[in-house]
Length: 379
Ligand code: UD1
Image (cartoon, rainbow, N blue to C red; front, side, top):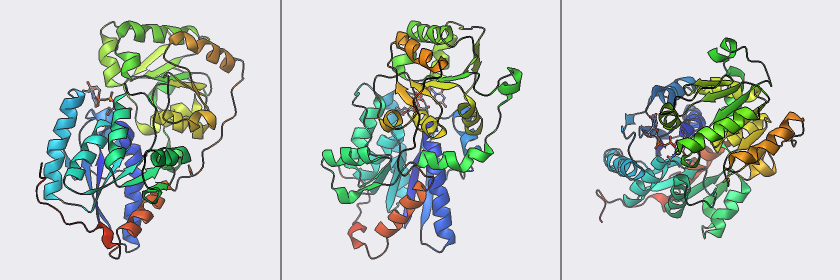
C-alpha cells in the first residue's frame, strides 16, 4: 500500500514523526507499505520547520509545495492547487493528514475530489468556537474523510454524534505524546538557561500566537503586563511565534523579567516545559504535553477542544481576559494546584496502532478500498 503523509505547520511535525517510524519498522518486518512525505510549506522559517525535521529525525520531504504565508484563503487555495498536481503524479491508496491546520483541510478536500481515501489523525476534537480557523479546518476535514483516528474517547463520541459510523472511527491515543515519550531522554538545555541563570521550577514559560490574543497590540501588551505583574518577580521565558513577533515589534516591548527568544527547537522547548513552574499558553498541543509532564498549565482561551487536559490533566482554562489570570497564579504561588493524571492510551504506542490498522484495512483482501480512480477531478 502507498500512503501520502501531509505535514504543513509546526504542530504537525511532532505528529508525523512517530508515524513515519512505525512505517519504517513495518517495512523492516516485511510489510508492503510505502510512504511519500509532502510538506506544504505552510511554516517555512527554519526555526518553525527545518529544525524540527532535524531534531525529530524526520526524513527530508519528498516534495515541498512552498505554500507559506498569505491569508487563510490564499494558503488554502495554493495548497489545493499544488497538492492536486502532486496527487495526480503520485497517486497513493490513502492520504494521511494530522491535526487541524490549514494544510490538513486543504489536502483533505483535494484528495477527496480525486476520490482518494483520507485518514485523519486527531479527528473528532471540537472547541465549539467557530471564530478559530482550526475549528473550521477540523469540521471540514472530519465531514469528508474516510478513517478517523482519535486521541480520546470523547472525540470518538463526538464523531458518532456527527453521524459517522463507528466502524470507521478508531480510538488510538495521541501521536504527539508518542513523540514526547520518545524524546524525553534527549531533551537539550537551551542556551538561554545559563545566560539567564535559570533554575528548575523558578521561571514561567509563555507562548502566544492565537489571533484573539495577539492581533490587537494593546491587548497583547496588556496580557504580557498582567503576566509579568503576577509572576512574583520570576523570569518569564517567551519564545515568540513569527505572527506575534510582527505585532510586538511595532511597539518594541521590553521588560526586565521578560526573556524574549526566537521560536525554540522541540528538544529545547520540552526542556523548558518540563522544568517550568508553570506554562502560560494559548496552544492546544502544549496543554497535552504539560498534562503528561504534570506541569501546571494556564490556557489563555475561552474554550478547549482538549477537555481531558482540564478534567484529567494539569491544565486550567483561564479565558482571554487577562485579569482572570490573577487568582490562578495566586493558587499556584500558594502551592495549590490540582494533581494531574494521564488520559487513556497516551502511552507512546499510538503510531504503531495506526499503522497496524491501516495495513489491515488496505491489505489486498480488503477489496472495498480498491476504488476506480478518475485521472482528473470532474467538477
Ligand atoms: C498555525 C496553525 C495553528 C497552529 C500554529 C502553530 C492554522 C490555521 N493555524 O497558526 O493551528 O497552532 O500554526 O504554530 O493552520 N509565518 C512566518 N514564518 C513561518 C510561519 C508563519 O513568518 O514559518 C507567518 C505567516 O506568514 C503568517 C503568520 O506567521 O503571517 C501566521 O502563520 P500561519 O501559518 O497562517 O498560521 P499560524 O498562526 O502559525
